[in-house]
Image (cartoon, helix red, strand yellow):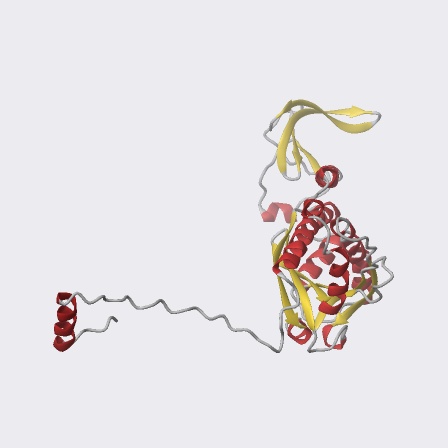
Amino acid sequence: MAEVLSQQQIDELLQSVAEGAEIKAPEPEKKVKPYDFKTPKKFTKEQIKVLNGIFENYSRLLSSYLTGLLRLYCKVSLVQIEEQRYHEFNNALSDYVMMGMVDMGVEHDEIDETTIIYGISNPITFAMIDRLLGGKGECIDENRDFTEIEINLMWNVVAHMIELLKDPWTNYIEINPTLTSVETNSRVVQAIGPDEVAVIVVLEVEINEVTNIISVCMPAINLENIMARFSGRSGKNAKRYDENKDTQRRNTILGGVKETPLEIKAILSETQIDMYDILNLQVNDVIPLNMNIDSNVILKVGGTAWFDGKLGVKNKRKAVKIDKKLRN
């Protein structure tokens, strides 16, 4: 609520105006951004921008791979990149989570240790496992340890997801990322000291109706060594993205869709029967249909009517000859 001036303050203000005194507007309050000197930022805005470009390209590649693998619509997008202490990242994880220990495989004499952590949230992991085992890709958000079968099943998937990191980094430095191990207990994973700084990349993943994240934890000391090798690269090369990758991505999606198995049903007619009649059906009983024997049948693909045709026989097998397409 605005402050109300007293009569004395109003008189003084009018007197100042009459005497020609300059009335200064109050200076706007300066915004102060807190800075933690205990955890100074190790990376510049330009370096974070480079990482943004790398992981945006990686998101596109990962979207294509998951769509083709799971035969479901999958979308991966970059959410944020930030610096954190390792214990902050680790404390935010579930007790049991699928974590891949990755050797970036940087081919440089001055770089030895390049380990990063690749964490997949439980809703995404369980949705992938459900789909790979023949399910619909539904979410089972359980905070439990994974079985040996689930770990072995996900190993190959995670290993390929890791290999996709290679292309986005190629414009800056040659790497050969490999999955060295899979851990499922986040509390025992200590890749670096708890107070050491790490860069956390957060990717949002949508699989069917499941949405959650993949986190990539890169220890700052390892990332500094890597980025020091390509800090002098030109911006033109940094922004270069091979158009063939887009074509390959589209072909991967189309290839996955074309190979998706669909159930086809030829339906002559449908009728309704009381449960009492169904329970009393016997061999040689006849169920009348309101259709002629030579009437066309409806071919349903994946539960949707697509074609109209006639029943017949070909090579001593029942067959349907398509007469008309019902959908464009």
